[in-house]
Image 1 (cartoon, rainbow, N blue to C red):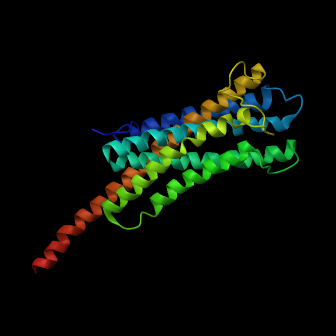
Image 2 (cartoon, rainbow, N blue to C red):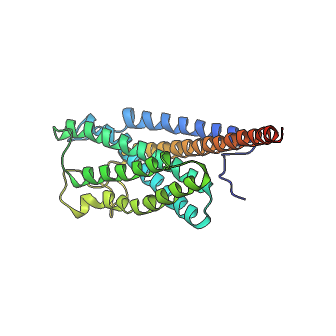
Image 3 (spheres, rainbow, N blue to C red):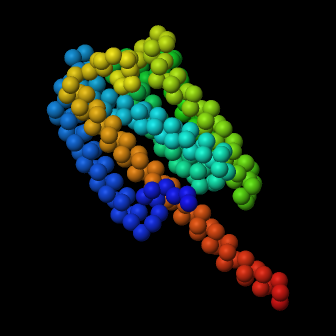
Length: 250
């Protein structure tokens, strides 16, 4: 039977609270390490500390879009709207984190480059990524009708777009390698030794763990919320149907 762990069942709320406490602990450790222990960059100074949120946000957005890819494929194979709700929750997280990545990058760019925006391959491809998955959410919010058939049509279109859109993720990540870019080279998922101080690396790792675990908790809670909405809607329809039938027989 289909079930996303920690979204339903008697222990789900307690398990999600445990995940929340884990996120809080990791976040606290990440803040202390990134703000107080890790040294400032010898070129950028303290402006470099934006990396400890900018990079984890981008990394976790990649993971969220990978979840969209997997759950969208599952929907197309199984035609089960529960997979579509998982894809929706993952897309919401990915869009939010990508928007945060762009905003933090703009602040960082202003501090380091002296400009909020540049027509840089990394920046442009990231905006395209944001627009594609925002379109996935728009399709789901405007299915073009009511009832389950319309929901399936919207889910099918959104799933195809979500799968195709994932091709932008490697494009975004490797754009700094493939084209001349103002943006620094990739901090993670790059060949060879990452160009980063050990303490900076520890701070970044803790920040990425905190962001990843936190996003996982938000995903599970959001899926549970969407499932609850569907159950409530189904219950309301079930209570209305007997009443309507009774009025017809009078």
